[in-house]
Length: 315
Image (cartoon, rainbow, N blue to C red):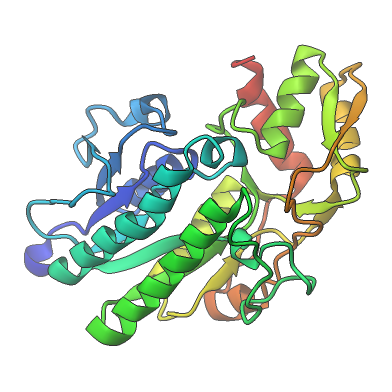
C-alpha cells in the first residue's frame, strides 16, 4: 500500500452472518474494514463486539442505491443479500435489486477506486442440479419464474455482470460460489435447515423434514468458508470457484444427527416438499484444492458442537 498505509476493505452485508465473520478475519489480517448494511436481514448484534475498534467502521446503507466511500479502497466483498428462503420469499423484489443494482453499484465503486472485488455467489446458481457433485463448468437447472427464482436469478445475473466488468473494464473480480454454511451468528429463524432443526430440537418441537428427507446437503463451518474466501480474493483466479464442504448427508440423516447431539426427545414430522427444492447439493472442490490450496478442516460433529453452544444462549 502507498505510504505504508493499511489496506482498506469494504464489506457489504457486513452485519450479516457471513459478513460479520469476514469483518473479523480482515481486521485480523491488518485491514481497515468498513461494514455496510441496511440491516434488512443483518443485525448490529453480529458486529457489536467491533464497536469502538480503531480499524472498524459501520455504515448503514442500502447498496441498491449509489455507494459513496470517501478515500482509497483496496478491496470490496459484496455480500449484501438475503440468503435464506424465508427471507427472499418475503422480500423478493429487494432480493432481485441487491443482486442486480447492488452488484452494479459495487462493481462501479471497484472500477472508480481501482479496487479488487469479490462477489458472493451461491450454489443456487446450479438450481436443482442434473449433475452430481456440482462442478464450476455446470450451467445449472434453474426455474427462473419459480418462487426461488428471485434469489437464483439475481445471483446468476450478478455473476454475468461481474464477468462483463472484468472483460470490458478490466476490473479485478473474483466470484465465490458458496455452499451451505453454518456457525455462530446464524439466526435461529432464518429458515435454513440447520438452524431450523437445532432450534426445534432445543425447544422440544418436532423437526420439520420436507418430502421423505432423501434430499442431500453439504455443510461447511463458517471459519473454513471465510478462509476459502480470503484465499480466493488474494489469488489470481477470476472464474467462479466453489467453496464448501463436500461431506454430503441426507436431510433425514441430518435430523437424526441433530437429535442425538442435542439429546432432544423431539420427533420427526414429514411435510410437503417446497417447489424447486434441490434434491442434491454437494460441491466439487477440486479447483479450490488445486488453485487455492484450500479444503475444509472442521468436520460436522465439531462444527455442530460449536454452533449448538451459540444457539443454546438464544433459544
